[in-house]
Length: 215
Image (cartoon, rainbow, N blue to C red; front, side, top):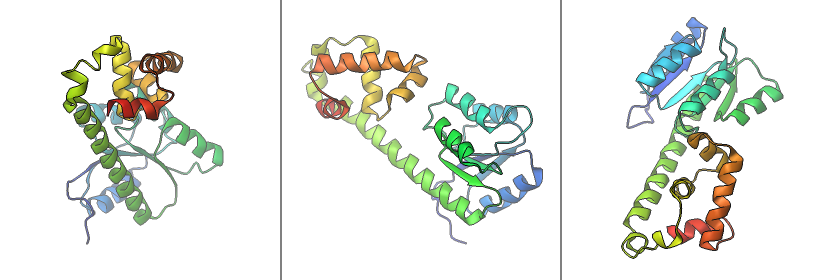
């Protein structure tokens, strides 16, 4: 059987259907994934804290906390892009899918499903995450290695506050205002104010011009 991943990726399954978890576990490890499964959101949060997975596959309809609760709690502790979530559920109405996507899930697969399609979705998501991670790292290295920013005092010349520098760093890494607000635990309106100040201090009109100025 062909394996798509050179580096073994860790997947966490969350579903109160024990039989489904066992079947998916067997199927996914045959594709060279490292798989762990739990049957509640509370157990999943404990596992994630101890062993951060590369991707989570979660049911929505569960006892106590549900899949929507899970992704909200996850986003409070981790950046939404850092642990992609796939919803695997019987809730197939349009408003259910819209709610899932609005909360930040990467994909929404309705039961019953084709396991080959699930593997294709997993590989696609992980490839995109790796790509954006490399872009983020490149942006940081470019910012740090650009002598015109540091040795010549270019960054210092704008007289940014510490919070403005933090917001600028997130912008250069590709984060949007909503995502920055979650990470910094402030309102999106506050982030928008900081971004506006960055535009004024650097005399640029938009994010693209701001990024070009520093990269």
